[in-house]
Image (tube, rainbow, N blue to C red; front, top):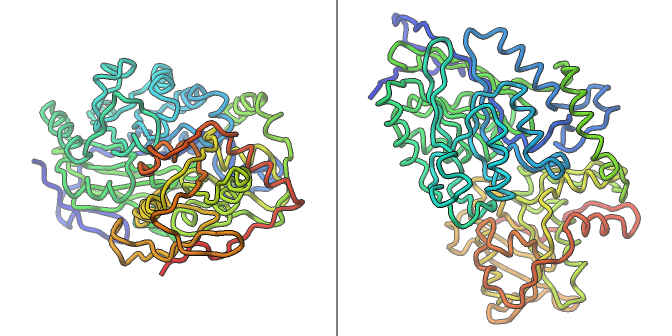
Length: 525
């Protein structure tokens, strides 16, 4: 087992005085949760107009990333470029091209490795396999058995070894253990515990003589810290999934960059191409980290856009323009849809989507709407609302599902919804026709939810555990996604209603300029 001696100093981790510095330096450039944001985005992570981009108000986009990657490589002795998963899903680019444009851009930028994110399974193993076949680098997943999935068996590897500057570097992929709840991997893949999976690959790589090991983890900051604490031999974890922003300088960062857990350095660069992570690591001859420092680089207007990449993205956007530019509504204010808010409390976007769903089907005897916050992917700015903006918020092509459950099942669903707030998980429920209080001091699924009220006529009344309620959600949640397994056996289920994005667009347009609001339907004690 290799031993690492690291002492923290103001975000930079270095050897104690008197110890000779090693001679192998590696810069790890990294992205995660890109979600098809090939074009620049606004400060709200939604679309950004060409005018605003010219005025320096936009962030990210493939053209800026390409420039930043080239500049970072130029100042590095040795460098690798890796991704923490979830290239798929999020804009019309994915809806139209699936994984083809992502593969093209990643190959063009020269990625060295990637892990499978849960959204890489959104369209099943077939689309993932097509993406894999188009890549010039390994995509990895250690904590799953794919031997029964013919499209991936023998092709999707758990780890890989690359060489930079004469040194071998081991890469290990990690995917959320609950991917079967989050996406559509099919019935033939079994996901397993991350710690055991990573340790098995570390041991294998170590036996091969590889002593510099990087985990590409799409499992979230909390799980990454657990993996670092409970494994030996992992040098760096490049994170994803929780869209965690780590920084030594920025207010609001969730931790330092890197976050050290024992001798393992954990990094993450938020999401959507807003930052390029840059971790500079020095290893000694035994593969121990003797220093690790860096900071995510902001992809703001100070980063020039690569002209060739920008031209290619402009070309790729042409088929999307007619859909994207259609103005479907007006909003009297910014509709807040940021995940850091909607995944922990009532938010304006959640109210809009839940209200729109309930409004569409209330004539069918439906009285309650539940929307998973993980399905809300962006905010919408004040002013004209285009279909492209609505599709950026709701990119998954989900359909409305209606069904009947007991009040007890409804309460169980809400308990599931607030069971992982601490990890900012997407199961947090946005609701309509219902209001409730929840207490974070109570253990998950042990009675966090109280005071559940439903609208009966024009009055709020306590939910009756024995009564039957008509519910609307999306087909993903009704099928058990985001932990809502209690809905799988619901009575009178119909999962093939209209597209959720179309429902929301029509609701937005119905009564003039939409006024975003919250009204206290979800209360935290």
